[in-house]
Amino acid sequence: MTTPHRQFKDAIYEQFARLGKAASAPKRLELLDLLCQSPRTVEALAEQAAISIANASQHLQVLRAARLVDADKKGLFVEYRLADDAVGRFFLALRGLAESRLAEVEQVTRDYFEQRGAMEAVSGEDLLQRVRAGEVTVLDVRPSEEYRAGHIPGALSIPVEELKARIKELPRNREVVAYCRGPYCVMALEAVEFLRKKGFKAQRMEQGVVDWRARRWPVAHGEQEKTERA
Image (cartoon, rainbow, N blue to C red):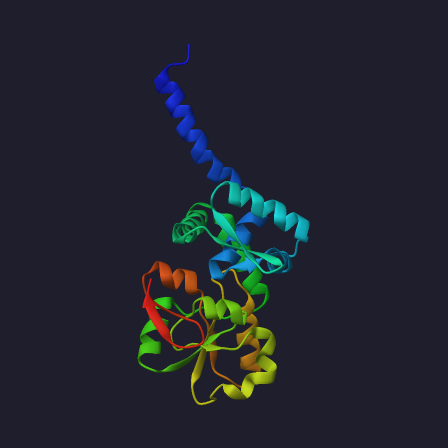
C-alpha cells in the first residue's frame, strides 16, 4: 500500500521532473538561450533557431507549461520572454554543469574554434578592468533589439551583419573587444575575424550580458546609458 509519505515524495519529484522534461530538447535550450538575450516573437525565435514556426511554437508551449517562459500579445504577434530572472540563472547553471561534467562540450567547442583558427577569448574580469580604464572599444555585435534589452555599459552597438558598412565608426587607434551572446555564440568570432583582416587589433570576449548580469556587474539598457546593477 502506498503511504502518504510516499505519495508526497512522488508528487514533489514529479513536479521537479517537469523542468527536466521541458529542458530535455536541444532546441528548447537554444530557445531559452535566445530569450535570455531579449523577448522575441515566435517568428523571430524560429528564424534564429533554424526551425519552422510550428516547431518553435510547440517547443514554446512546453516551456510555458513548465512556467519557464511567459507570453504577451503585441499587436498581431505573440512575444515570448523568460518567466523571470531565475530562469536565466537556471539556464546558466545547467550550462555550467554540462561544461564541468561533460568532456564532450569542451571537445566540440575546441574542434570548432580550432578549425576556424579562432583567437583566444578575453576574460570578463580582464575586460571589465580595461573598460573601466578606457583602454578598449567594446563592441556589441548582437541584433540591436538585444542590445537595447541589456548591454555592457559603454559598448557600441554594431550588429555583425552591419559591421562592413559601419566599420568607420570604430576608432583605429584602440583595441576592439567584441562580444555577443556567450561562449557558444559565433557572431563575435566572425566580427573579430573581419576586423583583423581590416587591420584592427581585435579580440573576442566569451562572456555575454547574461554572464555579466549573473556576476552582478553593471548592465545598461536601451539606447541611453541607463545603467543598473543586476
